[in-house]
Length: 351
Ligand code: AFP
Image (cartoon, rainbow, N blue to C red; front, side):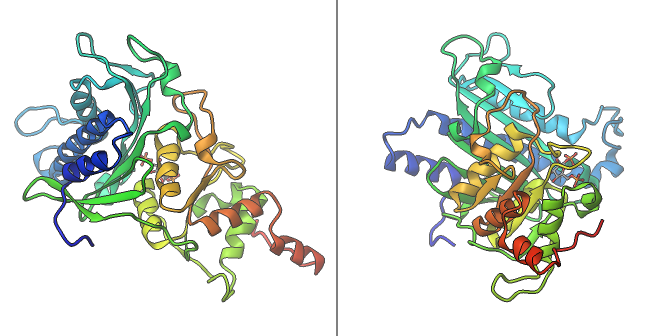
């Protein structure tokens, strides 16, 4: 906990002063995202009232159309970003195609890929949800940004992070100089520095995965999860299972406590469920900057070259020792598999 009160804007300005070599322009995009997050937060905390004032997606008592929260979140981010002159093009989970800067608005140098409201199926149960964002430099030089600008590998990100809406709302981000977390103080409308220089533990004792999909997983993933449940003092096993079903919430908990989040590909969906551009890549940047790892089972997520806006990727992300071990199981290289094969008792898979 820092010993003085520092707002997000003060922190960003201070970072710019300490790193004059870095163009500070994109930090204003970050502050715009924070502004949109405050507006989304206001709508999220009122979400429980929709049954009183009218169901989402229908008409409220004043006869006004109540927007779905994920659509509201998308439009709010677009409205805030489009007017600043920093933006070249956007890709959002809520739009099939890339979104150009509105006609007449100034065009800038940056690309923002985002998931406006991740975990939105959890809203009605009052479970944490989040916004994930990624800021990149444009590749093309002039005019509206293009698909080429959007489809860049994660290692080219200038900034990435997420907002977690919950019992307290937090914004966590990196610009490649560590990971910093800010907690929203609603009475003054500011994000305050609460978690400077977040470091994730080298090994955790939590695994987060939708185990309902077990029967469809490939053997490597099955064996790894079975192995996590066996007792072993040295590796702190058995691990605890924790799974909210909101990526931001699951990722954030594991970032602080240590552990591994997995959304593997399986027999039905070989590329899994999560999206590379606005889920896996930004969280990979955060994870790496906190000392963690992010992999698709074989390759570093940050190196994957996207070929489509809504491309999916398997994701294994979290504490470095956990992710490396998981990769070894997936690639059939973990010593435990071979030791068990030698004794003729391979780690069993349940089905
Ligand atoms: P929704 O936004 O439709 O709720 O999807 C959220 C998500 O992409 C991610 O946040 C979760 O981790 C994941 O889906 C949960 O999916 P499963 O229900 O398949 O576990």
